[in-house]
Image (cartoon, rainbow, N blue to C red):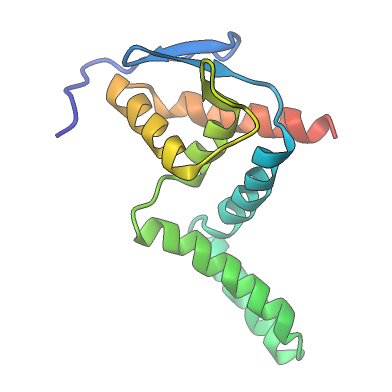
Length: 151
């Protein structure tokens, strides 16, 4: 059972660190190549696993691709849709929070490596500490935009 949270904790997104359950997390502005590959995959999952209008639009796109005999394109589109929706069905960590975990790492972590299992543990700590989800959405937006703009 989760610990009782009576006040949501905030992250000052202008700083580069915060604490969750006694663990210090550092917010990094960029990524090494290894975690960048996960960043690319998560961007696709986020894009395909959105709300109902986004899911409908993706299914409609796959339907059109099949009707125009672009079967390989339809397979890629449907795979992205299944992965995005499947994450929610399997109760896997939210892809936005996973994206944040690429940039928000435990102090002293090996930045060249990232695993979804370790990220899930970190997300659990953030949840137990009672952090406001809005801060993570802002961080995901800021870090992704800032990272992409730097390319």
